[in-house]
Image (cartoon, rainbow, N blue to C red; front, side):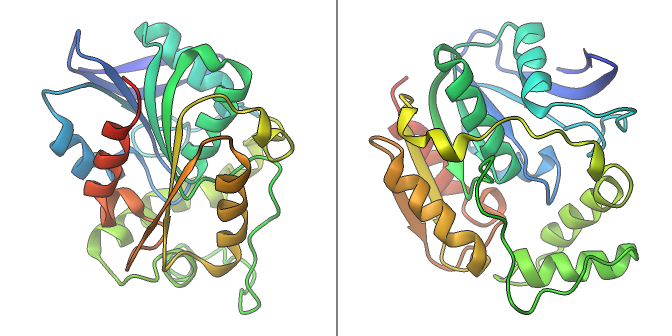
Length: 247
């Protein structure tokens, strides 16, 4: 069921299907919106309660009007949907939100799949050939493909990048930092799997590898031929990782 959920001084679009089945919460990256999870949802339909939403300014959610906390919005969505404890799968920005939640309120997170997570407080990803972000939407998408879409120009990947342009060109400065998970990785008590593509942006890889090493019990899975768009490129691997976690 689709609905709008009030989050502080704004609202987000959310989708919740599966009623009384075990809950799985899917959190999208900053390079797209919640549609990136469509291949995963197709594989899990009828087996789990599937929850996803678009972060403010992405997809079907309204743009932010002031600085906002992704972690606070996540909490609000979970409260409104009475979802928890749950399994989580988060990609990039979404993985960072899951990790922040697991550190702040571990009782909410039964297990988590971290797909190339963007970890709060981690070193910034920047490659030697990076150019300054363009203010032209079309050029911005091409830059995104070069940095994050190294597995090929799939139309779904292009569509995801196009959906993220308006946020980063208009409201990126309103995204609040939610902490410093990087300094606290050893404190994580949540069962975890970290998925990392072999075609991930080179400067993004070291932090992910180190995170998998430092998070107690975390299992690192390397995905051949996969870039930053893990839910689109490797949906079966995401499903396998979710099913491997304690239910």
